[in-house]
Length: 522
Ligand code: ADP
Ligand code: ZN
Image (cartoon, rainbow, N blue to C red):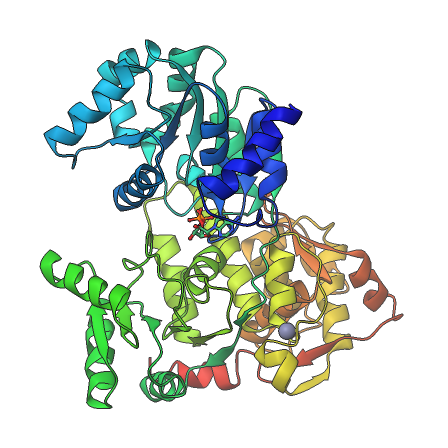
């Protein structure tokens, strides 16, 4: 054990050329060298690949690396080969010469890392061949692809647990992902591991990213002024539709910005050349749909702007995370409107997903809306969603500029007593109906029209109450149970306010205010 550790840190210098481990890497490398099965949840850019590459080289045997990203595979194989490591890949876009190089290394048992696309592992001939070689470990990258709760489900991932058993009985298994929320994490453990693995979770904080949200007023002007405040810097502007991508690219170009469009409807040649320009030149601004993303490896993206509300909190985090990979300051701005919120809700309701999936999507969207309407520190709100406690960050619009607030203690007490009086068993729409005094089918069914809370909130509109629930959630006074039908419950902090021992301030511009204004235009 000691030897392999010393050996590992020598390899860190000699093969990878790094002076030291990044936070979190060493403990994972140690666990892997000790033979443990590992699930590592780490933000993008934190250095996941080293956590399997290094042990793969430090120990005998072949490591299979499963990755859905062919471009990334190719880059890693190239980098490893250049560093003198026998690495190769099996995928549909390989040249025959490359395939035969890999096969002969494999037969001679000299290959140390083999990158395989999950589709390839679904083929019985591949599995048979691997069962006869000296595979000692399987590292699964982008492991959230196994989960239907994740944002990028790939059915081929579901058979990986099986493949591991066929190849090596109790093959040591490592799974890596940057997707952190609890349902996805639990699902990964269920689907990929026979017994619970060691789980490592790195902080999701990216302190160098400035966070800001603004209600849309005139969105193209707002985008333009944000982009102009970053003259000659590389950045991404995400839009919800292809049409808007093209319109914004034109508007930015007309204003003298070096902007290019990217969406799945463009010819592949155009997409590739725009992506290359973005990757290689300084100061290119890509206006794009979310099709632009996975696999971009540009460390000095200085800003990410969302011209429309992202799909959910996970998507938001992944998308802003493409800025500032080099650790230097980077800026983000997300524009949102009531119309965006409604559109995102509609997209969930109209999707073909099973009900349980829709439920989780609704909650993820809710978490993003809470973030948009957070009455205080955005980063604290975002990290709380990932289960991390933190201080006020000083690097978000709310910490720096604040927002107009009022004493919302009474409103909060009404909302929380609606939760408590109904036994902490109901979701938002039922609670809002109760506050408004609506005799819906469910209100009558549960006799909730007889509760003292029935109708106490009739002085506010439904949209305001929804905003109040989201703000109370953002400040941690109430929480939603992700596993149990999205029921709300009151936290210890919430009870203090409910009992009158603490006060809470809410935002003045609740859904009716500036956010609603935006919906006229967008
Ligand atoms: P992830 O898969 O977590 O997004 P990568 O494994 O691609 O991240 O690593 C991100 C970048 O960090 C890469 O450019 C990699 O070379 C670099 N890196 C990884 N580990 C270290 C380290 N210990 N010291 C310096 N740079 C590192
Ligand atoms: Zn803050």
